[in-house]
Image (cartoon, rainbow, N blue to C red; front, top):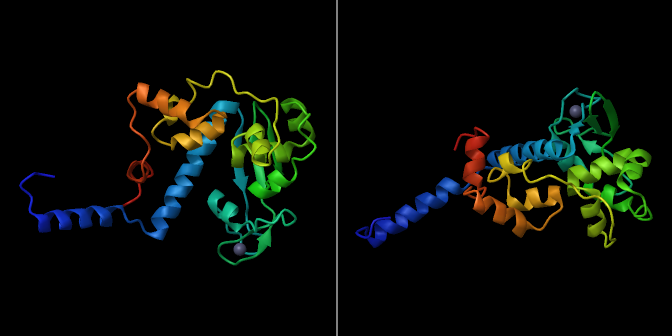
Length: 218
Ligand SMILES: [Zn+2]
């Protein structure tokens, strides 16, 4: 803003700025979908396994987007269904996992169902956990970044699960996802991610940047 700008002009300028950042509900949802897709891409990079939430409505055949699946959950530990965004039919979604030449379909739990099923499993090493409770393990990664982070949310310290060699893997995601999300998926303090990003001269992730990257019209 130039120094010579009048007060009235300045106010109008500020109002215009506010308006340009005010997003419609549809844009906000698009940003959420975009951020979630990036989150899954980061998890894929970190863990060499790709996850894809999948739900095709048995009543109207609509294929729900990942965020629609997540929003459709009832946040009830005993209700495993999501809700069709077109016809409101409730049904159980799956999580498709693509590994090194492998493909498995598992139940997809919501964040609170995942947390509700952790108790008593904290002595299991990650490999064992993943084998015995594959759906809980993967759902925890999708929603909470990892099982250690999920255990921490229910006040249980989990002694295992460290992702090694993650510094190069997060590089292309810096500034495109909020530092908090990257930190959650790596299992490290936010300050660590922020410091790495700043050192590389990458500006922080903002809504405007996400709008542009997702190709959403302003
Ligand atoms: Zn439907």
